[in-house]
Length: 465
Image 1 (cartoon, one colour):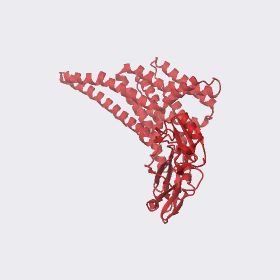
Image 2 (spheres, helix red, strand yellow):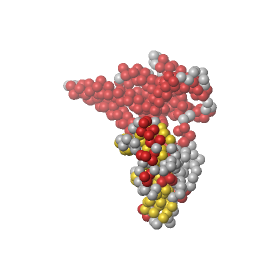
Image 3 (tube, one colour):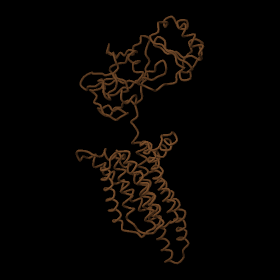
Image 4 (tube, helix red, strand yellow):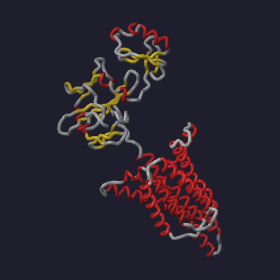
């Protein structure tokens, strides 16, 4: 639900502030007229978005049209004529741009169910909240006319700055402009500002409310308290309370909208966190043994093994069936999403990378977004036995590297794996060296620097700085 709410605010809130400043300097019109006009323009814009082709030429043309329309709107503010054209045009354009986003496609469904109704209600309430904030802001600007032009320019910048980046990016994609690092950097930085448009608009209204408290509320409160005649005192009291109610309503709407939007950004949009992994060590016989009985509860049991070079290999064990023992040992990674990992939600395993839900009985089967199976494990004497080589095969799937203490086998110096200048793989084990001389000495005669039981022919070897 908060996903759809959060998609509405950046698309419509700056436009709502522009229209609030527009109507603040013009004769007021009925709220129902504005509401019906806005809803009609929104639906027309969304409908028009389906007719436009999804091409770079269409995106460029739409961006230029939006730029011209916004520039014309700002120039029109030097007049005092009441025009519904700008109300219709700006909301229609905002609806068109929002309709071209992936949000609307994710709302579509073949059936009308509870999720569809809740998501649609979220969109309607978010749009209504934008209109309400715009209407309250327009009323405040009538009381504080000096804030009108600063709000116009700031809200216009919230739209024009990212728009300039989108236009530049379209021109480079169409090869009308040469692709350069400076241009691409400018486009990326300005387009990224779109994500903060909602917070920027809410901040502008918050600053306007703060100014109104100092310039309107406090002086009117003092005037009420200082008024002597009864009639003048009641008039001053009514004026102050009217201002107090307006500012209170604005503050309530600001807190509500900001809270819902921040909840999406900080909580709801975050991927699920992985449960803590139990760190395991592989004994000298190169076989990891895990007790089978605790794994039979149907829950995901995550483990982590740290290789000689500090890379962390995560894997988990889960019993796939409820009526009998059917354990599966898999890597906490897949070939499609990498090492994002998996979490358990009820009877399903969810890939953190793409959100796909997997049934527990399918865990252990290769392919798709299923976790990569661990090979050659077995159940023996009430234990799950995993060969070290099977875990080493999963090293390329993971990227996390822990900083661990290592010893230079030549000089005996204590180092860390992340700060060592050189490393060398010998007999399947990674050794770290403080300098190139130590590396060369070890490479020429490894057995000289290793204990008797570890000297062997190299299974794989290589050096890297």
